[in-house]
Image (cartoon, rainbow, N blue to C red):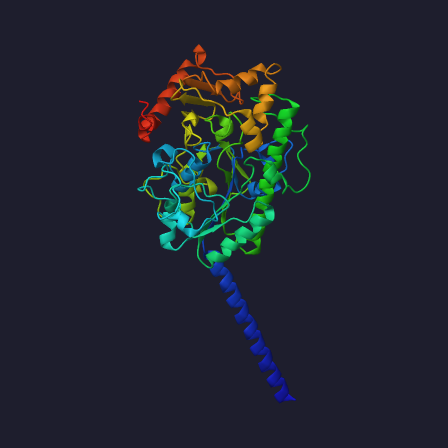
Length: 489
C-alpha cells in the first residue's frame, strides 16, 4: 500500500510538472508573440470626418466609436491632398505630394496583377508620374530589416517598384472579405513584426457597389445633415443617404478587420490606425483644396497608449510614416516632413512641437490637362486660406451624364436642378469651373461651410496677408515648383 502511494505520488508530481512546464511554454510563446511589433493601417477611401463619435447625425459607426474609446481621436486631422494617389504617397513617404513627386492621380496595376507588373519589367506602361527614386518609401525602409509589409484591395501607387509590399491581396469589399484578407496577411507574416495597410474600398463611388454589403438599416434620410454648401433638396438627401450608408459599410468592414486581429491575438498589442485618404466624393470636397475634401477622421489605438482622448492638435497624413516608424523603433529618414504623434498617444504632448498651421494642396485629379487646377491651402485652426495658383484657367466640369452613368454621382445634377431655388449653391458649383478668385479666406468658426470669401473685407486684411505670406514661405521651404514644371511660370 505504501509502494502504491509512493508510486501514485510520483506520478502526480510528474503530471503536475508536465502541466507547469506546458503552461510555461505556452505563456512563453504568448509573451514572445506579444513582444513583436505590429501595425494595422485601416484606410477608408473618400471618407470625410463623418463618424457618430465626431457628432455626425443620422449615422452608426460602432467600430470606429469603440476604437475612439480605446485610443485617441484626432478632431483636426487632414489629408495633404484630396486625391487618392497623392494622398496615399504622402502616407507612405511622410512628404507632401509636390515634394515627393507624386502630385496627381496615376494609372497603376490592380492589386491582384501578376508580380511582374509591380517591377520595372512590367509588360504595360502605367504612368510617368510618381515618387522620386531618391525618396525612401515605407516599404523600402521596412522590408530590408525583416518587417513584413502587406496591402489589400487598392494599389494606386507609382512607380510600382517603389512600393514592394510582400503581400498583396484583393478578395472583394465585404466585411467578410476584410476579415479573410487580414487573417491571410497576418498568417503570411508568421512570427515577424508587420505593417499592414488594409485599404477599405468604400465609400468611394459608385455607392451602389458597396451598399449591397450594408448590414442593418440604412441611415434615415430625414436625419441626415446636408452640408451647408449643398442645396437641401430631396435629390441631394438621397445621394447623401447612400454616401452615409457607405460610411457605415466602411465601419462594418473595419469590424471584420478587428475580428481577425482579436482571433489571432494581435488586437491588444498592435498599433491600429483608422483614417481615410481624403474627404467625400462630392464637388467642393474630393479633388479640391476645401475643408470638406481635406478634413478626415483619424483614430489611433495601441498598447499602453492614452484612451478615450479627443485631441485637437493639427495633424496630417504626412505624420503617419514617422508615427509608424517610431512605434516599430525604426529610424525615421531625413526626407520625412511629418511628425511622429507618439508623444500625444502616450500622453506626453508637452514633448511634441505642435503645429500652428496645417498645409494642403491640389494639383490635378488625373492626367487630363483639363483637370489641372493647382491650389495651396493653409489652416491655423480657425482661418482657412486658399491660394489658387492658376486662377485664369477655365476648368471644364465633366458632363452630368458622366457623373450619372460612370460614378453614380447625383449631387452634380441635384445642384443644377436646384439652381433657381438655391442660386447660391449653384453659384458655388459654377465658380469651380470659371472665375475662381486668386485668393480665398474663410472663418471656419463662423462659416464652417466656406460660403463667404472674406478676401477684400478690410477687417480681415491683416489675417489674409499673414496667411498668404505663410503659405508662400511653406511653398519655398518644400520646393514647390509645380507651375515651373508645367511651364506656366
